[in-house]
Each structure stands twice: as C-alpha cells, then as structure tokens.
Length: 238
Length: 238
Image 1 (spheres, each protein chain N blue to C red):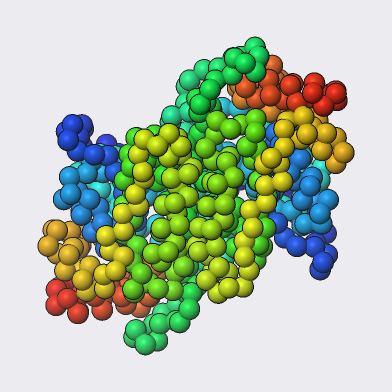
Image 2 (tube, rainbow over the protein chains, first blue to last red):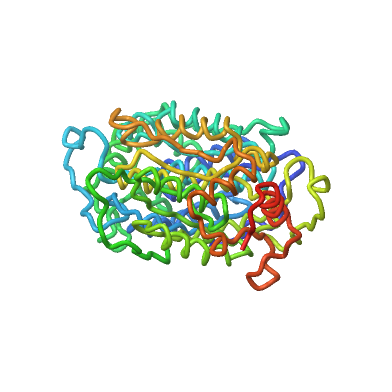
C-alpha cells in the first residue's frame, strides 16, 4: 500500500455507515462513489496500482476521492503485470476503434485476468477490518458485456462466497452486500446520473492508452464508449 | 511481483498439465505441492509477501519449490498489513499456548482478513493466463476450523464464483477446479502423507512468531499443531 491520504479528518457521524468503494478514477467508479456519498456512507476509497500502463487514472482517483470527501483513499500495489495476458498490463497495443460497430465482439484484449475478483477480494479484506458490510463497485453489464467479471451472475456469486469467507459471515453478525448501482445502466444513463450528482467530469480519466501523456487518445474502447455516452445524454464532456 | 526463480528450465512434457499451487512454505502447502507433482502436474508455485511478520516462510517456500522442481516460483507482493486486524501482520503479539485444550475457541487473532480469498484470486489470474484449470491449496478444515476461509463450503463457493469470473468459464472451455487434498485430514495424517511423499521436513517452516530469527518458537498455534501432528504420527520432525 502506498498513498494513504486522509482527505477528511472529521470522523464519520455515528449515523453514517462505513463502505469500501472501489475507485479507478474513471467516470463509472466516480459516479458510484458519488452515489454512496449521497446515500450517507462514510466512504473508504480503494484504488490499485496493478501494473496498468495508464497510471494516470490513479491521479484522477485521488482527485475524485478528495472532491467527494472520502474518509480515506488507499492505493494498493499489486503486480498483476507479472502474469501478463492483457493489453492493459503487457506490452500489447491498446486497440483503436472508430465506431461502436467496430468494437470487438467477445472478450476484448483489454480484459485483465481475474481483475475484478482480485479488486473485490481486497475490498472484502478492508471491509472486514472496518466492520463494514457494504462494498461499492461501478461495474456495468451493458456497454462492457465482453468482460466476464462485470456480469450480474459473477457479482452474486462473489457475494455468496464473501459471506462464507469472513468472520462476520461465520458469526452471522452482518451480511456483506456488493452494491452495483450502475450494473443495468447504459453509458448515457450513467452520464446523466453523474451530471445530477455533480461529478466533476474534468477530474475523471477513462482512457486506456498510456501513450498520450495523460490526455485521452479518443480512439480506444474506453474513449469511444465515453464519447458515445455523452453524445446520447446530450451533455458536454468538459 | 518480485522473486521469479525458474527452477526447472525443462518445459513440461506435452502430457503434463499446468497447475497453480499456493505455497506458503509450511508443512501443509509443501505436502500439497508434493501431491500435485506426484499426480503429474507441471506446478507453478505462488507465494505471497503480504506483510506477514514471519517472512522466513518465504525462504522455505523457495527451497520447497526448488526441491520439487516447480516450473516457476512467483512471490507476489501485496500489502495486506495496511488493512491491519491480524497478529500476523499488525503489531499484536502472537498468542502462546501450551496445549491443544488451551487453544483459542472461535476465530483466532492470527486470522488474516480475506487472506485465502485474495490468495485464490491471484491463483485464478495466473491459472487463466496459463490456460490452467487446476489450482491447489493446502487448506485443512479439521485442525484449523477457526478460520472461515478454510472451510469446504467456502472453497466450493469460490470455485463457483471463479467459473463465472473468467474467459474460460464464459466460453465453456474449461471448468476450473480448486484442489484441496488435505481438507479432511488430521495433522497426523498430513505428516504421514508428507513422509510418504518425501517432503523434506527440515526445509519447511510453520511458526507464526517473527521474533526468534527463523527458528520455530515452539509455543504458537502453528508450532503446537505441528508438534502434535508429528507426535500422533509417530514420526520425528527433523
């Protein structure tokens, strides 16, 4: 673990419940954090330096955690790049596309093996230490249906497993819930929701391409989906 | 990821199947690796530097991986100590006990939140990259019944989740199996099995206490269970 910024030195009120919020710094996870804050959770934001070549997203995550007053923001360092097998961690070019019709069918090369399983496992560990029963993750099953670990059946199976894995589950104290408020939304619906929640679009980072110095390339899957979402929502992406 | 020692430069034969074997360097995981090798698997040993204070076990893991001719041995660095909450990672004394009757009921303080969930998630990632459908873990439900993530119902739930999490699961190519050959054995039965398989007891390390320079303290849960197992098996622990 590296960066540990206590943005909000004020402890949560006795009525606010602790939650662990996975935060990549992209539009979806930022919207998910904003939702958890709106619903009164004291948010513990968790990001990962997993060997991704687009590390700029971690700076975006720190800005978003600060903006929404997360209790803490931890960046866990985990070397998934040692396993290889993905354009996000290995030396494989991030594919460029010009239209949604051109996007790859099936599971894209930007899929990182078992990434969400690992991310949720760390969130589970932190939740257990905090005594929290609430984990938020901004997965979306519509636009990203190519990723096996963004599907509702995966999330439910993880939740079942998690409730057998922990002290709280064994002792019957609490039942952990994996919150996926964006699961069934289109990108345009996420953009509208983000707009309502006051997500500062300019602080988020969605691009997968490491080669353009932190500026979005405009041509990868992530950039294309983001642009399409904003266009369909009729909202400007500043 | 840090240490990556290729012990065995000879590639596995075309008939040997790749397996990922979780390896702490203790008696149980060493026996589990020996079993996987006996059954003809090309073993990819995976250890974790997770902030445990008893880091000596990683040296034992490297010795055992070399001894049994693992294809590779990876040590993943993951800072679980940042979450705290366990005597194995936080600055809490490892409890001393003098008899099995004195061992704590319920979940011991040496339990590390979500540890096996995280370990298995990394194994899943590596298995997916290798195209392997076999993960070995030396969990044991009898002597360690205090750990929620050593129970059969947890392992089965993880397996179900894992088969929804990965490309192979989605595409119906392979069904991942979590092998737990020690699950229902007593410590004495594990000692006898290890003896039959030629596990070099002197190369393994079981003690949880970091304070005695790599020598077993003889008084923690792990030392006590090991001694009891050898005594009951009537085998000398050299």
